[in-house]
Structures are given as C-alpha cells and as structure tokens.
Image 1: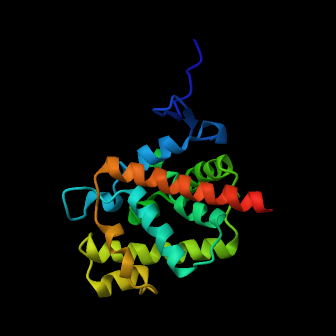
Image 2: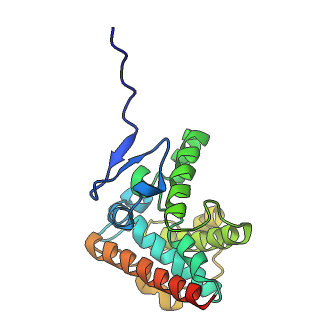
Length: 207
C-alpha cells in the first residue's frame, strides 16, 4: 500500500511563493503578499460599522502611528517591527482573542514561527527586544480601545476593562480609524513600509 502523503501545510501566494506554515522560510516572504493579505483580513470578525471592513493592514498602520506619537524618538527599525507586529495574519487570519484562548498554545506557536520568518526577511530581530515589545503592546492596546469604542460597539467601561484606558488622545489620528476600501489600504500599507525602509537605509548610510 503506498504511503499517504502528509496533508498540505503551505499556502501559495499571488507572488508565486509557497509559504510553509510548519517551517516558514524568510525567502518565501514578500511584502506585496503581506500587504495584499492584511488589507483583506477583517478585524473584529467583521463586526464593525461602515460599508468597509476595518482591516488588519489598517490596524497595523494605526498602531505604528500610535507608537510613533507615544515615542517620537523610536528608530525606524523599531517602527517597522511595530508595523509588522500582526503580519503573520496575512497567512493565518485574525482570530478574535476568545477563540485564541480556546485554541491555546498550538496557534501561538504557528503565529510566532511565521512572524519570526517575516522579521528575518526584512533584517529585523526574530523576537522583539523587551522594551520594543512593551511599546508595541502599549500602542496595540491603545489602538484596540479606540477601535472597540468607535467601530465595534463596545461601551467605554467595557473597553477599559479589557484593553485598559488609553494613554493617548486620538488628536490628529482620527482619519486612521475610518474604515477604507481594501485597495486603498493595501497601497497605504505598502507606501508606509517603503517610507520606513527608506529611513532605515538613510540611517544605515550614516553609520
């Protein structure tokens, strides 16, 4: 009897790359695939107001800008890590936190391996330094509070209970929380990535 082939554990991307979810390689990661995928993954399981989804790409842009506002001297390398903090979801989607609790550590292991491959692809550390991880978490929770109360139907006390009270007023960031068409968000994500990469190149040339 012929030996059964193992189940497929890779996804083909529009770039032609095949990313193995069990053993992801940085060589199979392309920023165009990430931008395309994240712009089409809905936050909050799509349970947000408005005619467009609020995508993971838009959330990532929001979090990066929140982190920059909170820590204006954050270097470009760190801001790129913040922009890519949820990049693994271009492959595995955005599971809501309650469902992640149900799945447990198996989900987190897959997510961490994919994110590490993504960060290595762009010459970033595969695991975040503790201070950067703290800043990213702080910015993520602040952004999530505003998404919850502005888009996802949470009352302020409920959002505060789950996400904490934000340490930053929206001020000039209001436009970042308005859900946008997927094509526009994809291009904005790519543009922000390229802008930060250009900053990294300039910083490296001064070393």
